[in-house]
Image 1 (cartoon, protein in one colour):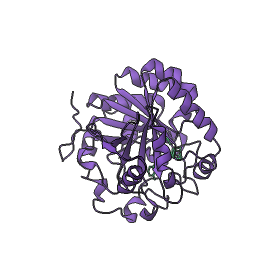
Image 2 (cartoon, helix red, strand yellow; image 1 turned 90 degrees about the vertical axis):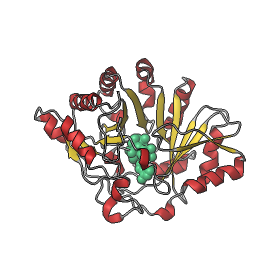
Image 3 (tube, helix red, strand yellow; image 1 turned 135 degrees about the vertical axis):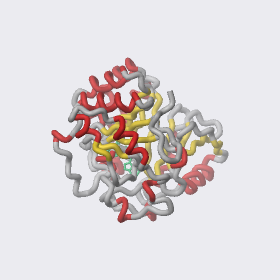
Image 4 (cartoon, protein in one colour; image 1 turned 120 degrees about the vertical axis):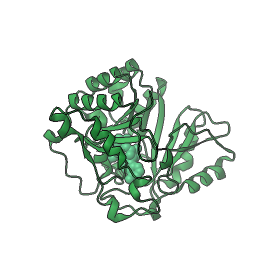
Length: 327
Ligand code: SAM
Ligand code: SF4
């Protein structure tokens, strides 16, 4: 069934990213503002039953893929129950995690058929990891990545590149793809409330490609799956691949099929959307929320919530921080 959630530009939306919590066990500086965030009050956060009910309304309208994210999704209490119930909806489930608690859930993921996991890992250097995340979990994360890989989970590593921090590691990440079927997703640094974004610190799609080409020679472009947010490549002879999410230098909005739901039950029709639709209040009042969803998608702008030509601080400083949107 194709999705009924179609915007003014004819784009059907079939992919929902649900933030399970705004809490996190890391403090990545590009995501979490230095002074922390004002955490959501517990009663304003969707209960597990509410998440399942709201997800069902999206599914009724044709959403067939749900990614669980956060904050850190694996710290959500009774995560096991939630993911099993979501699996029962028959949707394709995906997960983005920082990997700290991954070992506790691998059996469960096996049993529900969740085989692809995105793990955020910005550096292969322990000291740098402590600098970026403000916490010391590097060894645990690396062990968990190894365990998941040994059990043949398909791992994608999300790497946000920032000049002066980790841009010199681009080719170290690519080296991991030589003998392992692992995918690297380089992400251009994006602006959100309080993250002191400045594009002079960003590393562009072009720079990444040429850095890899200079070291490894032939870089083969791959077919990009429909709705892909990354342009994908492979170094000739390598088992794994790499992709680049070029939200800043080459946005992929024309084919966007994504919707976001924050942990407090607000629908965002774009990652950069400042306006939100409160689904939770209506759901709690016992209403059918499907019209709210359909109406919200009608106000979706073509690209980056109207920041088509450049990122505008008056705009993104009025958005949430990434940790409370759900990346
Ligand atoms: N805690 C989980 C994790 O880190 O994977 C899930 C939530 S996190 C917000 C989701 C993704 O957003 C991560 O891969 C993270 O690197 C990315 N992200 C956060 N802030 C970003 C920024 N300013 N620019 C680009 N990507 C960002
Ligand atoms: Fe937490 Fe993920 Fe944000 Fe890092 S990127 S602070 S792990 S939510």
